[in-house]
Length: 272
Image (cartoon, rainbow, N blue to C red; front, side, top):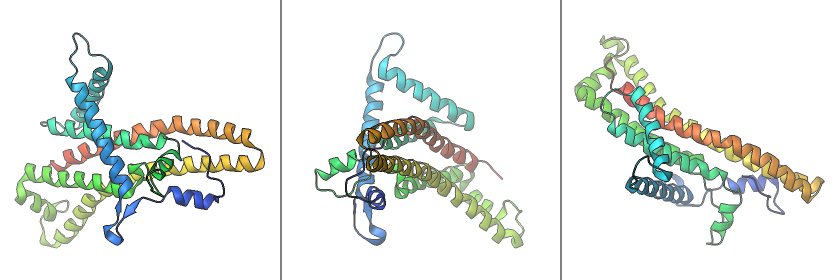
């Protein structure tokens, strides 16, 4: 959510500051510490909540956290069952993990904009971004795991020989003249899946983060031209309205990131 931009900062400085990662290393071996820390912490928190819900013993109908987690599980299981018609135990677990984890990471965008950086500043960090899914490195890393699963499921269903044969024989047949076009098209199709998966999530969350910053800058403009009351009213109205709408984006993007890997894996097992 938007908060007041720092005094003495230009709009450009304010946005650049909030888009700068806490990082170590240089070049290719640059690690975004904030992305790694927040995503790992949320994985532990989400996992602990799911385990706690599974261990709750209740007589009769489940209640509270257990009832909510069961509802989410049934939602994920139903979607996976509609897409994948084999043994879906692993894919349901994968979908449940992706959905709950991505919701947690996306929801960090709803924190007051300046709060994470202020807290990090207490520990000596000058920069700190709190939304892992607004970092392309984070979404690409998750998409690469899905990429490996797509290849693994395809090899499991067709064997190594069948999988390699498909690369040279589909979609134009096994004529040697068509091998290069077949390999090219299969490579484009395979690479496009993790690229689109990661870019879609990153793009939506990055855009949401930018809009929260623009709302904060709108409040700064109110403060300069009208006064503190207008700052407060403007940021509350616009920030709250965007936060409510952003909740839908948080859930929708997590749902898409949960469904598409299942779709891709189901397609990978099909024989051409």
